[in-house]
Image (cartoon, rainbow, N blue to C red):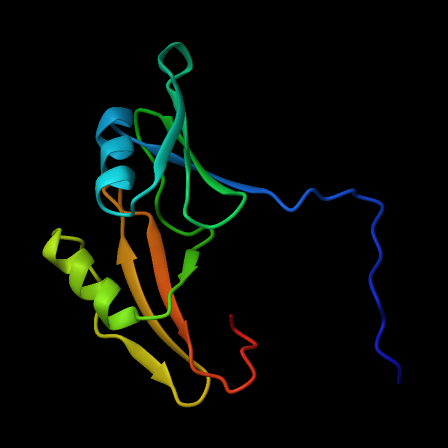
Length: 135
């Protein structure tokens, strides 16, 4: 059976904003800057909202302050790196909490899960495939 090609009329721009709740907006902004190296684009105090530019082209993180942030479930932001061990060592030196050891699927990918200041799950991945399909 031929593969069905999905078509959409949505004119995507290539950008992505990942919006997350946080308990303390200033603390979260500082964490994303100091720990992950993101750049503050803007901070709207009157709306308790900020947006930070990630090192990944056209990918930003939006942070909204709420009384009780929800960090369970939802999407896991998964960040590609060329040297997972070095990044993990750097993050651990900044007291970032990881969920167990780095996992490896041979000839495919290495994965390490960590958490931000509000407990949102993030993941690092390093492509091990010969054809770069995970890059």
